[in-house]
Image 1 (spheres, helix red, strand yellow):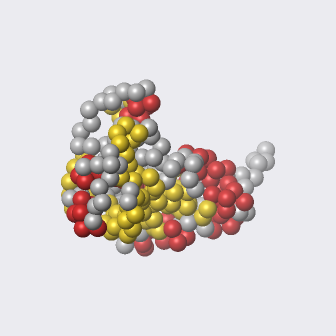
Image 2 (cartoon, one colour; image 1 turned 90 degrees about the vertical axis):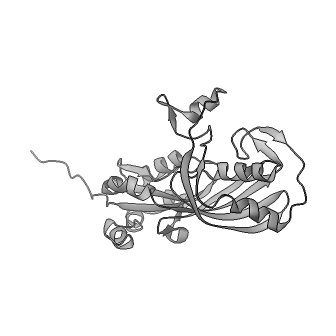
Length: 244
């Protein structure tokens, strides 16, 4: 009996995506799954719907190095807005506290950022995927519950404040795995005494991967499948990049 032709084999590798706002990381995975013609696909580090930028998708055998890729440091560009705390520590939450924003100098703002450099601890936000008794915190948060969270070690290797137009402050931060930029913004607001929340976020780097080769979601939807396959970063190239 003749077996049906299985068709071309989907190559293994990493697809770099420049995520658009107002879509989940899961949405991007679903779109790429259909476009690539594969069921074996995952992502390396969730980006919230509000956030844009680099989302790394592991395809076929690359799923085996998912944890390795997720463990690498990352770079973000963000904007924090002073004077308002929110329930989610970002602009998508409800305002829980509002204070007047003093006329901070650049030196005062830089000093607050400087308090959060090197190795320190963060308390994960309630909207994180960390589990409490097997239930993700964000599911408890949706029910209006708040539970105690243990501080977690994180590292900031570099930061830069690029624009100050109060109440807004633009910044770039290089950070370790497990770092919450929304909590970073929240904590800097507390350090300045007026509160803050994260109002914009873009991931620009993860490990040695940048946005340079990233595809827009619309490109993934319309690109011919074989061309999309060719855009994958191969496992061999990843080994060379990582010095393996």
